[in-house]
Length: 331
Ligand code: DX5
Ligand code: ZN
Image (cartoon, rainbow, N blue to C red; front, top):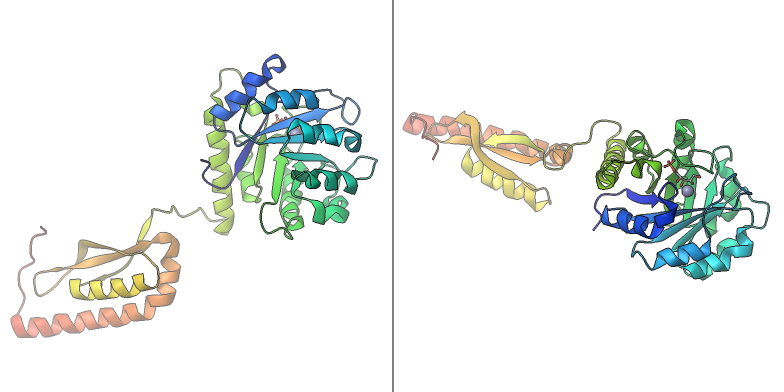
């Protein structure tokens, strides 16, 4: 099962076209989340690729969802064929010169996800009239037509956050896709810009490269980018990192730990490097996850001062009554 946030749609544009059945199986085996199919008509873009019949054939070869990216002038004319071929989502370009809404409606009526793609030079505002009909916004970060082109950073920076905004009416299931020049060099950036699906093409088909490793890398980098963003640009705090909240003698530590945990913050008590006490014991470290250190201080900072003061009073009283016992050896 996919973990993390980012999803990888493997574009088969740069695969061996004589062996596409094998290509989609390989993508599936190597951990891709979707198959991205670039349909080109030699008219909307200066390149020609696959049609619905081929998609229908591929449908049987993989359990992965098929995302069709139609770079064709007349999607309205052929839309039924693509639905019928078994595409899970169909995205076409907003720059076409025919009515757009009816085609989006047809896709949705068939129970598939409907998307619009924007070329690098097209402002996102072109999508405005169709906002409520969209499940997917596909932002192109290269000119459509070919794999292996250079990623357009400015376009990504400007459009990806805005695209997410465009889909804010749809609380669940809406997706921003980025397509063009996505690889290990650019994944962290687009992840940080909140993209949901990264279309990766040529980077997966380099001879002698391990496709699975490439997919895992791009995904991990995109997720790391997203975490940075959540953390306001600072390096993300690893989820397993613990921070010392305070040190207290055993009785105090146990009581305080229960108080903190009652509010849902997990605490680990470590017999540790705390100061020595007159009864021969050593203070315990109370550790909380570093990700919630701030919250713990906010909630329990004052209590921490009280506990520390109480521990001091106990030490003094104990020492006055019994004197100091030599520190016990840690068991
Ligand atoms: C280009 C296609 C892309 C292409 C991306 O028009 O829409 O899906 O496969 O290839 P890379 O990842 O090499 O830019
Ligand atoms: Zn594409």
